[in-house]
Each structure stands twice: as C-alpha cells, then as structure tokens.
Length: 250
Image 1 (cartoon, rainbow, N blue to C red):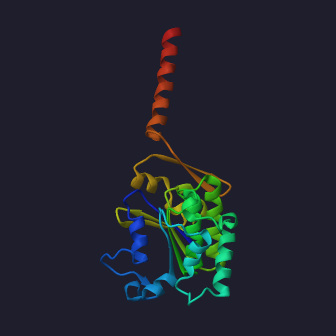
Image 2 (cartoon, one colour; image 1 turned 90 degrees about the horizontal axis):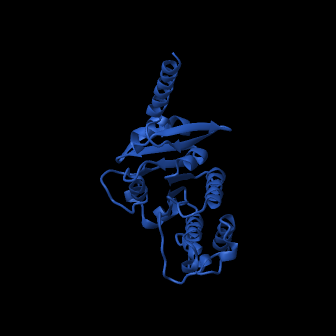
Image 3 (cartoon, rainbow, N blue to C red; image 1 turned 120 degrees about the vertical axis):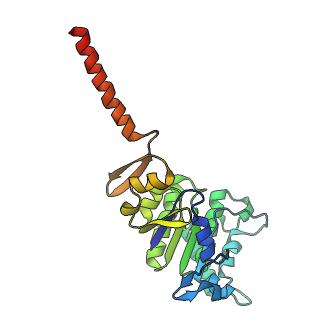
C-alpha cells in the first residue's frame, strides 16, 4: 500500500517520518506490530524501516554501487554475499541507474542522487519504506517514473510505502490512501477523493482551488482570488450591462 502524507509546511510530515524511524525522540510511542519502536535495536530498525530523506549531499567519493550496497549493512557479514550483490543489482536496474553504477555519487545531479537513495533504502528490504519529498528534485518524467515504481513495489513486495508529498496531484493519482496533517494532528484520512476535497484543501492550505476529474483521476488547480466572488462579480457586471443598454435605448 502506498500512503501519501500531505499537509502545508510545518504540519509535521517530516517530523512524523523521523519519529517512526527513531531519528527523533518525542513524547509518545510508535508501535510496529504491537511492539514499541523504542525497544527495537538499531539493526532491527534498519531491517524494518527504509528511510529516504528530503535532501542529501555527500562530498565523500563513493560510487553509486557501493552507496546502494550500504543498504545491505543490516545483513552483511565480513563480505557481501551473492544475494547482497543480487539485491543491489536489482535495485540499480529498478531505478534506471545502470549507466551510473560506477560513477561517484558526489558527481551526480540532485535528482540522480535521490534515485540512488531510494535504491539504497530498497536494498534494506524494509517492511515500511519512509520517503520525505523523495521526488522533489526530479523532473516531471522522472517523478512519474519513480511514483510508478514505488506503487508497483508496494504491491509486489507487500510493504507499506509512506511518503510525505507536496504535490497534491501526484498524491491523488498514486496514493492508495492519504493522511492529511494540519499543525501536528491528523486532519483527515482515507481514500483520495474523500480527503483531497475542495473544502479540506481550502481549510488547511488557505488557498482557493478547483477540482476537475478526468478519466477517473482528479486534478487540483489553484484559483487566484475567491472563485465564488469572481462568479458573483461576473453576474453583477452582466446585470449592470443590461441596465445600461435599456437606459441607452429607452
């Protein structure tokens, strides 16, 4: 299942992901299969949660292959096994990184590095994949490509993909369910069309939107100004025009 985590800046999306992964320690408990994450060892957490941060910069001259191999660290002995190498190669192919495998990560573009991070997280073979704005540095073609991969991975590997997203249209198209956050609390949860409504979006983002549906997919479009006032003003102007015409010829 792919779950989109949406909400305005400061709503708690990144904080929630980091609390699940125990990067942050705040009040309360995170439970995984009725067990507190705080009671899990570092290696158990690494085998359970794969995490892709919002931004990553590396000055260390490591190759793409070796970077992705680091995702196997929770399973590695003294040397990588044949299975470790097979998992890494499979994820390199999955993310379309074959031409970059022997390149150094610090030589890649921001979008290419982001795909390396996703491949590394997948190499952990996690039960839950956490992504914080993982498509933000990608162009539209690669955004769609990555979202299709993540959707297919969630289904084929039977894992939960929880992804913080700013693009509501991507969230609507690819999420099985959506969690909408506002000021650190869950504002709404459910299927896309029941959560990403005009009323909900306007309530927490404080912007006017229009929602169009085409081919079973909804498209959310920001509307400058108050859409309802604009329609009302148009009606008033039409009425004034009619009155002026009557006055001129009457």
